[in-house]
Image 1 (cartoon, rainbow, N blue to C red):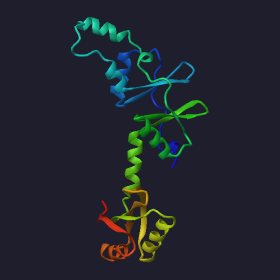
Image 2: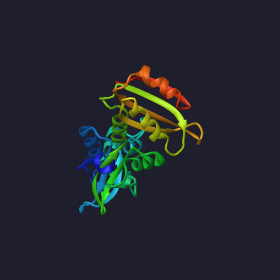
Image 3: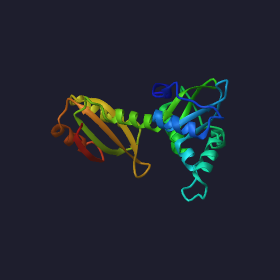
Image 4: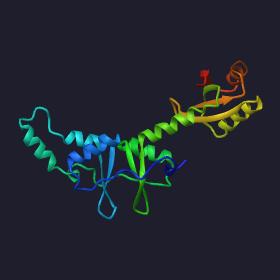
Length: 215
């Protein structure tokens, strides 16, 4: 799955000279947390997040009057608090690459680009929703996690075992183990009973770590 398959198209944008109050208002009214900043030609200049605006807001301990605060904020522009340059991702990048960039940089959003032009936004919420979809197939009736040796062909072997017993794999995910020699594989299945599958898996894997009805 690629970033373009999950991104938000036509995101709301602002310019570097957008005022602080106006940016706040857009975020509040649109119920969003990130605003790409573009120039008059539509070129990306930066990105501002709700947290950037909150951090730039005067402290409650300030001695400024309400009038002074309003004047200060009205004359503050997003170009003074936006992230420059913004970290971006191409639209044809794998979704997991976008997730890794967010994790490595501790950010919650990436502008999505095509030939230098803004195409959309991919957010942590988009990533979470995809993760839930992968591990939350509605057709599945059984969820099983096993611990196996992290060797070539192991997933194919287990898939063949499940198929040979009449089970249908609705989704599958692989996770790191405690050591490089092992990993965990989670299957969401239909068409097979727990009472039949679990003994077969126990005889074929290091450990069956979790079994439950999918929901």
